[in-house]
Image (tube, rainbow, N blue to C red):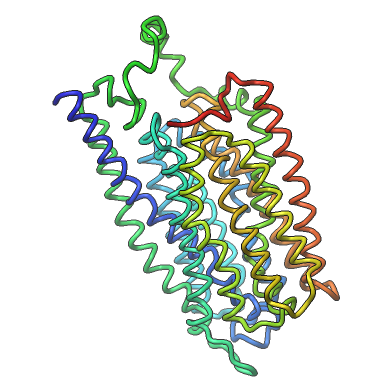
Length: 464
């Protein structure tokens, strides 16, 4: 096969790979957010045969991050670099589906231990989802290196978040709000049953990706389309650099456990990790309790709240790929992070202090939050391959997700506690989210300063 035809194969296959990878993530995002717009069900245990209250729902939601925080993400990220995305990813995509299945079974059973079983299922689902997401991100970095990586990551993120939008809009239709109605187990579990159908589709397409990735690795490599990525170009190194790379010891390219210490000692890793945990906690924890916040704040019905908060994922469908293209074409990623963090701060200030009972302010807040939710990830995730070598890329993504889940575990639980115990819960919890955004803006400015002081990292350089 000629170099040109090999390169053409990789470029075509890369987009097919992306199409396969987005479906498991769509299913994951849907299942994770299936109760977000109907969280009012858990304000009173008497509303459902399931009998959960807000604290119980908060406990269930926090289960997503438990195994991730207590070592699972770090260990599995190392396995990802040791065993590769096909083996490790397959194990944890399966765990994701299995955990979702346990949650669904517990919801349908309605037994006294349904909350405990759902909590365990959510733990398995959470670890599986995070490692599956790490494998997906690492695979995109592999297949799109030297090309439109930010665009590809933006598209993956946009379609995954469309799963959230699907959940936010569909769940109020599956579980219709009715005054004085006690919701049966079957009614409460309807969103989960839809999620299991999506999981099945995700498993099938993940298997197809594994076959395609294995086939690509067994093709003869040529420099123009070799292992450095589908979009890598010849001539990207000088002759001296090429000879030096060829002469390098293979040990330098092999992952070792001591490499984890190198990642942990990297200041830029901690800046990205802190920005990730602060920014995502202010949005993901908010989404978990969106119905319980928006309905009383703006005096709207559950379906309207679902549409209002669905503006977040719907906006990313358009703007995440668009901002990804802008990062690829113009660079300046650290500036996008600063701007996105500021927009999220403005959104939560509106949610906390805007006049009550006026839905316009809620919609405006969602506009700002949607832009921020697109800007920061479009620049943040493509920055990770710039701060660490390829051999520890999976470990680095996993460590960042670990830091993120440490915050999510805390703030999901804290959000449920505040809403259940405070006389003015929606405003009180929004003050917490505002504080997170203030800290995120500060960290984003620190990363901007790092980019200015270390131009060799090319953090603000174009990707293509």
